[in-house]
Length: 160
View 1 (cartoon, rainbow, N blue to C red):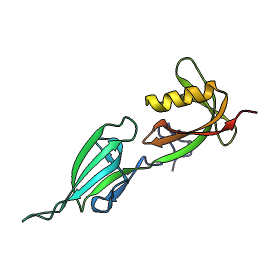
View 2 (cartoon, rainbow, N blue to C red):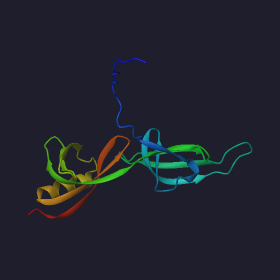
View 3 (cartoon, rainbow, N blue to C red):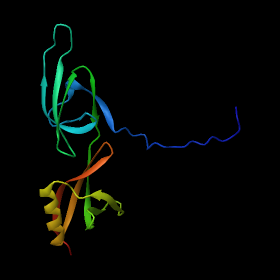
View 4 (cartoon, one colour):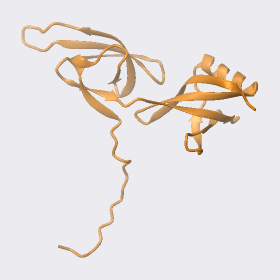
């Protein structure tokens, strides 16, 4: 054995996987699935019967949770599909900068400044109007596969 110290150049994150495997036959409508490397919410599932030589197939129709695009995939029902870890976190809105970034207050009291305003026009106008009116706003941020986006808004009353 060697007495010298080894240096490891860590280029990875904490090792938490962005997805987990789940059998295709067990994925249901309103669940999540990865189609073409994009996290999607399942809006339709249909299962075909087994053929002469094979597996039953599941036909998934999903909508990308970040850009709203419709994606489809067909997978044998006994095979595993990737399912993204989707989390929702609430943050209080502190400020909106001119370049389209928001400043958010985390649970621990730190600020989070790396998030853009949403692209959805309806949600964007609600956030901007509510902030301009001086309301206390709480935004819900959805996170999956290393991406984050504001997906909902709550008004918790006027600022004191």
